[in-house]
Amino acid sequence: MARDEQLKQNWELVVTKLSEQFGEGENLDLDAIIYLIGVQELGQLHRKFKKDAKLDLMHIAICRLLAPYGYYEFDFVDEEGWPHYKTKEELPHLKAGEQSVLMKEAIVNYFLQTEFIP
Image (cartoon, rainbow, N blue to C red):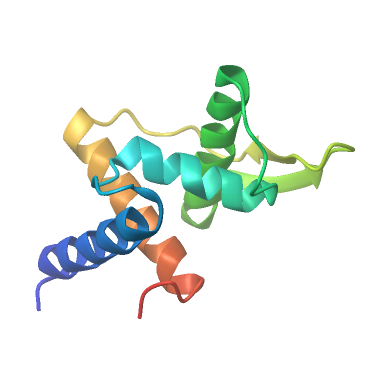
């Protein structure tokens, strides 16, 4: 099976499983999934977050997702339990579609590593 087709199938599986669990009947979009990964990485699952904290959670998720690609490296966890990353390499300038494919691939890899999907 072609790599693109495998990514598409795995992405649809991730969206379906997460939407069933968290989507209240609606399919989650890319941003919602990134947010959920941020909450997972923070480990404070039952907490309500304000808008600024939600953006920070998405940043945590993006750093975690792109660390295996060499763009970020885990640095430390602060006294409030928030993980911090440092930039290892600047992200390349990508078109919106290319950014979306990179993030979907990183998300699929994340959920393969955590065995959320087979």
